[in-house]
Length: 251
Image 1: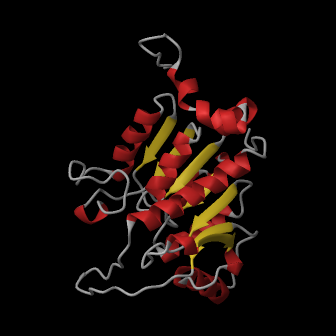
Image 2: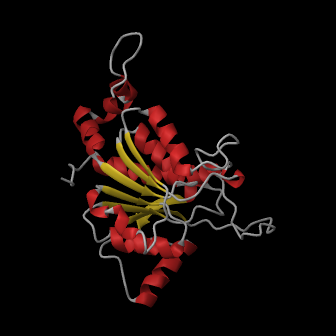
Image 3: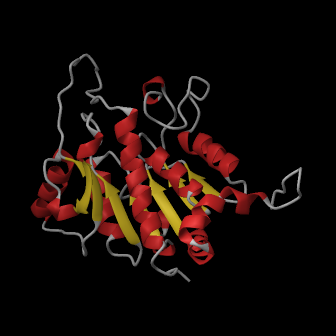
């Protein structure tokens, strides 16, 4: 369905991306629109990544997350509000993304990526695979599997316990320093003697603070929206910058 402006009758979508097209050009925007992206995890990092992708012209996006919105998500997750508590995260986010571009193809999958479900996702069908998973075991598996595909793969390291946005960086996974999650992943790969088949870029910060309040029974770490959002935006930037330079790789 192509929506039209009620005043002038022109299609809505071209107007949405006018400013992006001024910078990137029509050919690049058409290429971005052809890219197929799958994003695992739509929490504090992934939700902002999804928003940025759609606002930048990605039309074919699959979002994967099993969870529902809860009160503790509201301080940092895009679709989490007092009105959406209890709703399925990917469904709420899908509605928001379609309100930005009704012509986008947003597939919402309420599922966890695990060894049991991994084959359901057919990773070879995508141009880009984005990891914003929290679970160490599942994250390690996604890294290993994604690096066996022809898709470009980008990963977020830990965004909790940080306040300084100027310390957020992008580098190759084995060059990440000061991040406990990256260290735990590397130790796991070495322990299992199983390593990613190729290099991949990560968003990370070498800042590591401590919780001032340790009363959370779940053991969760504190996190802030300006950090998680920047992590998500930087992940999206990796996709857009790469898509601006390369043709579609999937048939």
